[in-house]
Image (spheres, rainbow, N blue to C red):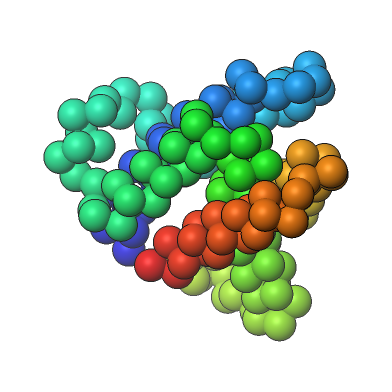
Length: 167
């Protein structure tokens, strides 16, 4: 579990950067503000002090091959691709957590003494679903008027990110 949390913190540091890049490239101030807030939330996802002093050298030394590949994919999509592709690349993280934990909350009881109860409650929270919905709204806005070829690329980006989530 500790190894997962370490990789997740490393991932979240780059995910937050991707959110910030998309915020900087946003087309409305509402989107800019929301994305910057979401980036800060990602940095502090595992607590207010978890990623405050995370340096690139630490990431380079400790990130797994999957974490490096996934975050490189996210940052490339955010920096160098159409905004639609950036959004569909970051979306699987939020959508998968929202679905998994909402489904589990509806079908599973987590006992009081379970050491993972707080994490379960954190991700089963409605705010996680709301985040996924808002990211989907941004992606849908950028998808309007997109060519069939661009929509196919967007689907491939989404599928690629979802495969990284599974790893």
